Image 1 (cartoon, helix red, strand yellow):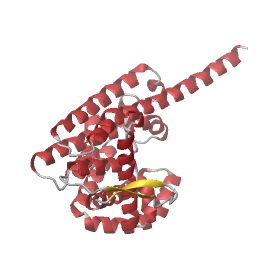
Image 2 (image 1 turned 30 degrees about the horizontal axis):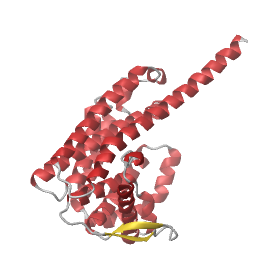
Image 3 (image 1 turned 180 degrees about the vertical axis):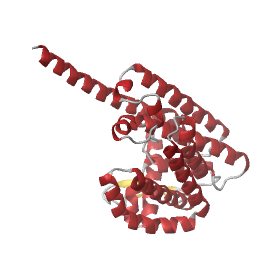
Image 4 (image 1 turned 90 degrees about the vertical axis):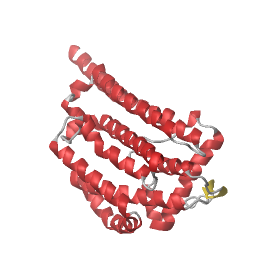
Length: 303
């Protein structure tokens, strides 16, 4: 995934942050056990959030015990004794990473494609195991990625259409195995979260995609670097991101969490906003740097 779904540490209680880290460390441990230590490099806090949401909905959850980090034994951390949901999330890490790798091979630049081809044999072996363990989920992710490629090849300018496969993929990942009202609520929550991730990624990559000629649904409205320099781009992007983030937060209201409620609220209400702010702040930094360079050049010509 993209790394946008993470907690906002300044607003998180110390005990909740330790639990948050504990789920991450537990997921890392399970990945290493099921798929070799190499698989740990694929883990991100996006996947940790998936584990936290699904663990929060269970009637019972394993205990957290103090232990040592499997990567750095000198470091102490919490470990969750609940393995079933963590194993499922580990399978998701492998499945999503595999199809992302195929997408990078198809659409990436020369060096990126080369690196991905070197990694592919190892990840393919891991994927075969994960696909056997999660057949329905593997088919859902494969279908979403295939639909994403089809839509991008069509060159559509519709943000709704472009973000739909990402939404469907996250909806399937969050809701699989649940039934009735819980499944409906998890589907909606996952769909909106996937849509928000896609939109923010499009905003984050717009300059790079303009330069490389890669597909980006925002290019229809903002086709070149000059069109990004004013306030219109930020206003246009923020309105759509804020609306989707707000709907994502509202979708939490239909879910009954038995634990980790404060962590989930922090990620959705504070963490997502912080990721958004970080992306736009980075763009403002690039913009100011360009303006500074142009100003220096103008001053030089005037001398």
